[in-house]
Length: 146
Image 1 (spheres, rainbow, N blue to C red):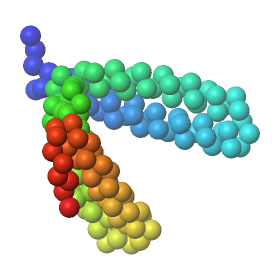
Image 2: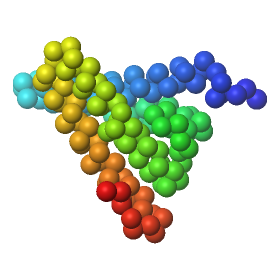
Image 3: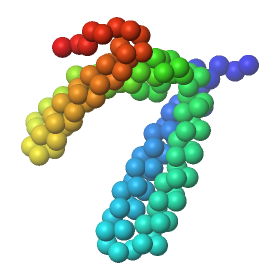
Image 4: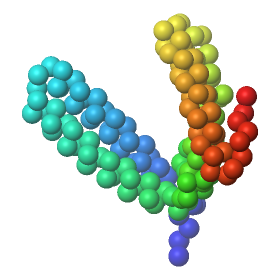
């Protein structure tokens, strides 16, 4: 049997997962815009397309689950594994990714985007705390990071 972990197919699968997830969010946003503008048929179309995208994204994730989380690299499957993977990805976003892109945006003169990214880092930290609390509840550990 071929090793998916060392293949171009895995790279393609991760890329497709990200693209389809982005398309899903775009379609939901497009539906809201169309509905707001009074184009109800277009809104319904985008909502149906978004529902189709969910199937695609979940299908890709089912294959990725065998390898691990594409963001954290941690195992996926049972709830505790999923919480650990989510916690790692959100913590990395809060402490490394968003602060880094905020600094870059600020250095390049995009103050409003830098502020947005800084706000997102704070939000990601809050999300990580909630995930950590849920993980602790599943393991019987009542400690939550400070």
